[in-house]
Length: 583
Ligand code: ATP
Ligand code: MG
Image 1: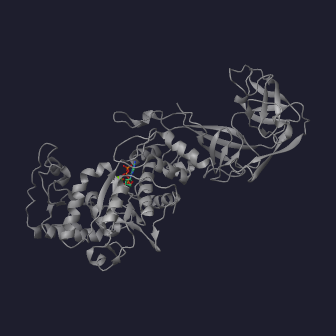
Image 2: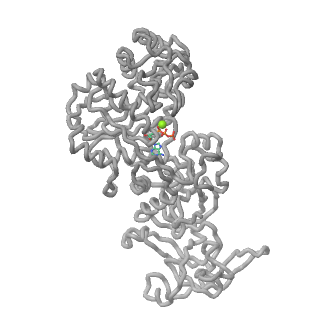
Image 3: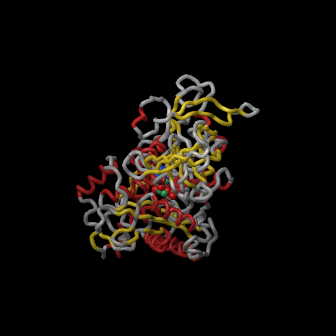
């Protein structure tokens, strides 16, 4: 479990504080596995003070919006001595796959959360409850709370009414319960084709809340399910499956995003009916809604992410430009940075959009104290120290992490020929340019002060070599180091010792802050320069094992690509620059 900074309060914490004070969930019984009232009421008092759940549908990869929900649900359970379940909400057979189940497990673990408590892994699949859903449906039918409707989906839509007009009752609404029960059994037995009939709750076709106008509970779908195969041809609708899943698992606080607010009356209705019928044990779970994360410069809808992947706009679900957790990890985001980001954005009921720079800043703040430092030169030009002999090699060193000046050190040689950034030399410097230009004094970091003496150009007029002379007695760390004051310090690597590397300079995938705003095709906002590849030079000793990360001095945070990098052929992703340079 993670131990980040002390939690900031929010409306959900206030609710939980009050529930714990009033003892609302104190005497709740629990007997694993998740179960209906009969088994639950034989169980002991639940040792978990609260239960929350993270309920992804395994139909895609998790993204940064899910991280908000994960940190919230697992964080509340951790802080209140509760338990958070990982539940795969796999009631919709069409788009769900095992591949996504594994990817989701990996990412929740990677974020630092765990669902095992007292040796029990609280990992559940809604599809394991299919038989219980069915038994509950029969109980609802027998009690007159549900009926089989033989109208087509179109007819049901047409008779549902509008926000201002009530709906009209189905001609099948008042059929005898025994008749509905037989039809429901036939539906389950596969005697009817898709769409021939559906099981509907019997609530109120005139309700001002359209979600209470006899919502569909079961529909017929003759398709295989990733876990139950062909055992079922009727599948429960999300709106009733979800509250039942929560209740079976003894969830106390069921936290979801605001768009489900209008579903809450149905959530309560279905649980109350099943509780009255003795199917579910009280106290019942309660649904609370919070504002989903909207992040600028990205899309997070799974449908749009899938489109980017399938149409080849990016290289896969873990493309470092995507806001999927797999993509962010590959880009170099640490789990701590994502948790810090989720803490900083907080939880509220007000919809808002968070600027992407908030995520980037969380990464810098998380990595700055811990990242190993190294030097890389991304746009190299040669610097020749003309008063060094050709074979001169002088050992230099620097702290691996400047926050620990007495900690481990890195060693690298200073030689006559170095690689420096092309931008660190100007023949005609602009005002306030303090780096190399003819006549100027600059410090080579961890080395000497040098005086720039000029440059060599090729026939096209491009600078191919910069020349300088070093000033003896000015070496960093020696008594003479401060004798000459200079305004600029530049990074360098020995040309003879540098390691060649491919560096992928990523930028935002979209040029616009709101790529998927209502009226436009989000693909039009794609940034054509979101990945630029350069051949760079690295400080000797830099071992680009997959997943190794650094702060390259003056440049930013980088990570060796998990897929492509090897120590012999480094492939490195830029995670984020040191400063926010995007305008
Ligand atoms: P999408 O609409 O992209 O398909 P979803 O909400 O359908 O996403 P689920 O797998 O059902 O995806 O989501 C699992 C949980 O994550 C839900 O409880 C949902 O509320 C939460 N969640 C999804 N997106 C966000 C978001 N942007 N911000 C906060 N929570 C989110
Ligand atoms: Mg969903």
